[in-house]
Image: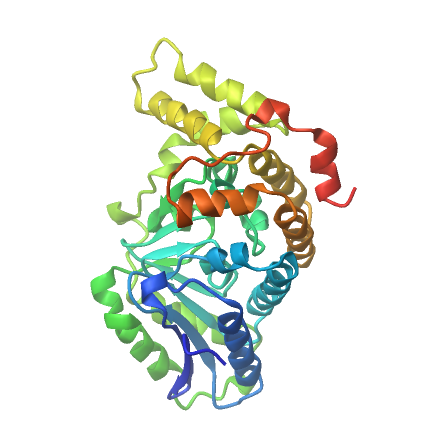
Length: 363
């Protein structure tokens, strides 16, 4: 068990609360195992009819505790990822409604325990991202599949630039189902939890047709969510869809970067779209070059794979990346020393050896 995970019941609900707010609820191995243990127990408990996961403090979860991974041996990192990815697969196939409250910061591993759930709730405070390339890693926890499945090249843009997106963006990306204003959600999701408990109280889910319990959970959330036509549901990311789709098409990272440069220097470069392209090109040059090239390849492969295969791919890539120096260097520069001056190897995208990328995938 973990002191940072509270597993408790509220009537017919199982409530999982990540309680490590000073670390933005970053996941360590004990937390992962505690979440898995509670979910396995509740899966076979008839009195628990739905599960809610939430976080204390400023968000659901900012990701894995990568500082701990930097300080330990490679084998410890690989063991952590194996446990984490097993948890992600359990959530994706969970036999009961799994309601994730993605209020506030929800990134990396936080998306792994939420975006694969059956009922995913965001608010106006939600900030989502898969920023792993910033630290010499790659989007994992099965999110390569959801990044690849996002409309057009929106997921590619987010992954290669380590950009953040809003709750409304998460809806457009297919990572969330409902946007509930935080004042309607209630403290710690209390208002929503109350509605869910009321709907499932006294309900014999065994008598319901398949999927009906998930539909009941969605209906309970929908009563608090914004109307689909509400202007607050306009997704900022989608506004750049035209230039993003143009820039990020194809399988070659250098070609993508060249297209971004061309857009950034176009004659009408003062437009918002082209200013964003300029920022995207700068972001791609700041993050780890090896990670950028590896990430694009992982997304293109993930588009043709099921989640179980993507999670297996994530583990292979994790083992390859932890064996390189970039990941520990990225964690040092951005999270430990915070000098924001990582020394990547190699330092430029154009110097990446394609054979090393292929080897990371086991080919």
